[in-house]
Image 1 (cartoon, rainbow, N blue to C red):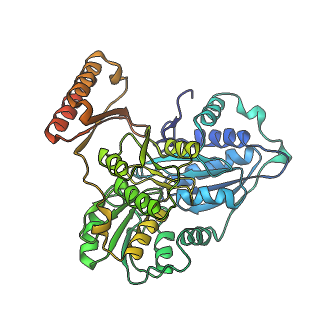
Image 2: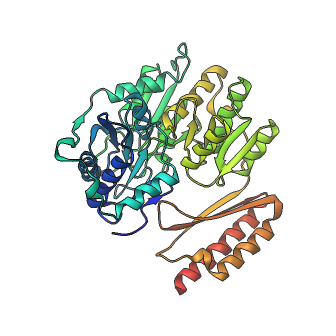
Image 3: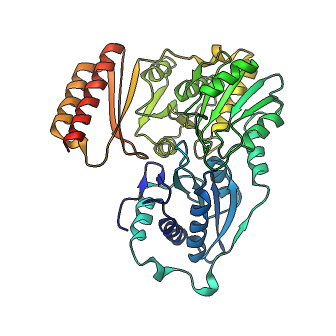
Length: 450
């Protein structure tokens, strides 16, 4: 069973294949349970999932492992990842577990773990859990009289809806706004439309009929074409696209134009800065965010702090340096005044708050900067380490020299899929395209030769 389990966002892979098997899920439950035993009280876990077919298998396997470690498990059912993070704290649990592969297709699944403070686990804690998976962990499990219990918990949707609504001023209503929300046939299919409606909006909900197979299928934040079409069709003021576990969001304006995470961060940061609410003198994002965002913030004398890819690293930097706005271009937006992780619904509510305060259409509010030409291409690999090959290293060095100080190059292995991601940006779009294509070709040739 020996192997590497955790990636940039927990454990993820094809369901029923290594590492997303029932056996490993059970052992992760055992190891996580043992890692968070604190004192002599009845230890508690909250466990949520999205709407994938394999969620049933992984859920039951994890319950077995957690109960074997002496943890009582509160089963939340399908619910957004940020709701799990919130409920860990609300229910004074020792661990939070979310079973989801986020924006991936239905045949993938994953396990995300949260500590008692509602934050994703650090690399060190993940490594400790990982080291336990290949040992005789059974020797440390609970005695027969110390086994945990599992039960379904009612009312968790209502708790999260109320939490989300309270992130807006009490006096603010969304009355007069027509909103299309695309729930990606995922975890927010009940809570997101309900929260928006209760706040007074006219809500048109799409992709809210999960069947175990259609999560993220040509819908949600990674496939917003259907949302764009629906916004035009019903003449909506705004479209909101969530992903399968609702920790990321993409906005569509009234004209059907997509507003990505960089523009959302720019909008919220500017608004909070003007209101004196922005902490730390800047925003935290990853190496993938557009150079245009950095320049926009610089014009306001604000700094863009960059981290490696993964909202977990964004959050760690925010906590370490006292910033309260961060996120990723893909739509993970972290507003630490409210949440400990990315929250698509709460982020969308902040955009809606800007609309209501300024009484201007989304198209006028959301285009805060002109993006610098940026190109991202993925190269699928079957194994090996092509980035360590001499021809690839030489091509990367040549590309950096060609871009110079007027551009950026980011090349990294995906933490969730067998891909090499090649991204370049700069003021010269033809140069950017040429640089990316050259590196992709070299990696592809190296892969073929291997």
